[in-house]
Image 1 (cartoon, rainbow, N blue to C red):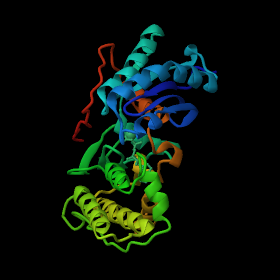
Image 2: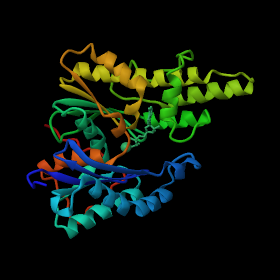
Image 3: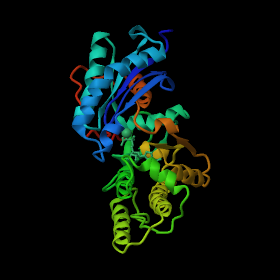
Image 4: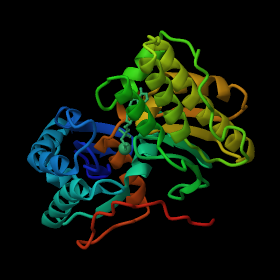
Length: 342
Ligand code: KG4
Ligand code: ZN
């Protein structure tokens, strides 16, 4: 393999997927191994941090081997090592950080620290090259935010959830409906055959800011289900799912449109686990038809959830900007984007 190419070995272990990828020039996936632990956490109804760390340790070396083998590269071919160092579960993050540091040290390679949320945004780079200025609607299990990117490597959070993240609301509501964790996909599938008959609240939809709130919706949903079970009324599950999803989608769509009206951007990027939501993808297609010259870039469906390929894509930007860490790199569970003024 020619050395001119930038080949990044990337690590992701912030939550419940152990993932190692080999990414060429920030936009070509040579391999993307994802070992999911979901089954181990399902019986607890959520991710158990200690269980997650143990699984990461068991899996990480196999993931490295498989990723290198599938990509047909050796350590000689690697230009740099990129790793998620936050936000996430500290014990989970530490496994990826330790593995990345060990490889960078042993092979004398630059070490690139990557913010997990920047990684989610850069998953979109595999669909279409990210162009600036851009706005990202970032919706995952832990975060819901609108991020303005005036230029490469600058991330400004202009709005975010004041309570639950969108994915968290999907998961909590799913639990009440007797679904397995994480419930987002199942609710999405069920919603496709239902109608918005319950008309749940659209919190903060009309407020003059870019923030979100989903806890009121969650409570309204739970109250509706509990009340029905107390009076022995059978509710239509598909309609419940569709009503909940429509409420989330309407609020995300309203605030995103408001931001698009006020920020002059070339692209809207949709990323994060909840970006796989079909209702949301369709709604943004409709919304963007109102905006001339703004391209909608949706993270590919198979790269919306946590994976190391997205870390490799974001790591490539860090590589270009020589944003390197030394061996003192530590996990930062509460890592946030630094607000950099232009
Ligand atoms: O980004 P991600 O994989 O992990 C975090 O960084 O949080 O997001 C996981 C979240 C879960 O809450 C899951 O229920 C949700 O994404 N999710 C969905 C869909 N697929 C996954 N939510 C709604 N619709 C989907 N199709
Ligand atoms: Zn994530």
